[in-house]
Image 1: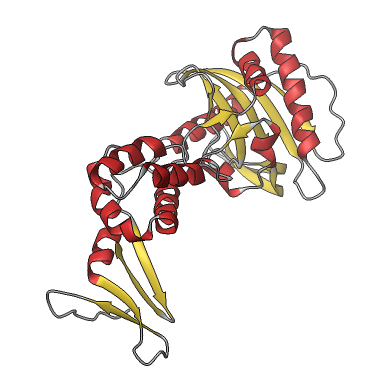
Image 2 (image 1 turned 30 degrees about the vertical axis):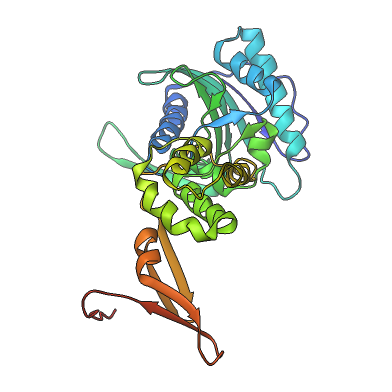
Length: 310
C-alpha cells in the first residue's frame, strides 16, 4: 500500500510503501469487499473498461508488477488524478493497494478517501469492561460509503475494471483520470433502449416491447439482431441507428437485460399513469381532444377500475 494527498494544488512526491496495521488492513479490506458486494447487486453498474492501453498497463503494474513497478504506477496514477482536479473537487487521500482476497484472488487498484467528518468519536471497550470515548479527527469514508474507487482482480477478465455503483453519482473526473469507460446500469440501459426505439422506430415500439422478453440478454447489437428476426419492420438501418446511439452515449449501454420488465409512464398534469410497456401500448391511447383544447388519455380495462387512496 501507498498513499498521497490529492488536491488541485497538490504536488505529490514519489511514493513509498506504507506500513499496514491490522486496523488499517481491516478498514481497507472492508472497502474492497464492499466494492465487490455492490458489483454483484441486481442493478449494479457493469464493469468498466480501459479506453487506453497505458491506463490498463498502470493497473496491471499495480496488480502483478514488481515493487518498483507498483510504486511507479502509483506515482503516475496519483499525478493523473491531481491533474484532473480543480477548485471544485474535494481533496482527499489516494490509496494504491494490492491485496489477496479469498473470493476474488489478487486485487489491486486505487481508492480515493475523503474526510466525511472533521470531528468524530469512537467508543472503545477496555479489557476491564469499561467504555472509553475517544476523539477522532478527520474521519474518512466508511466501507460501503466510498465514492471513488477502481479495482482490477484476478477473477475478472483482462481489461475490465470494477468501479462500484457509487462512482456513477459523482463528477466524471475520477474515471476519466484513469481512462476508464463507465457503463450505465441495467435499469437505465433498458430505458435508454426503448427511448432510442421510440425515437427511430416509434411505430414499432409495441411490437418490440412484445418481443423483448423472448430474446436473450446481450449487447445492444446482439439483442437488436434477434429482435430483427421477430419484428420485420426493424430493418438493418434502424438497428444500426439504435445501436450507435446506445454505444456512443456519454455512459454507453454495455448489455441489455431482456428479463427486466420495462415500464412506461404518462404524466398528465397531476395524474400519473404507469405500467409494463407492453400493456401500456395495448391498453392506453393518447389523442388530441376533438375540440382541439388539450389532450385525452384513455385506458381500456376488462373490469371496472377500483379507486384507492393514500
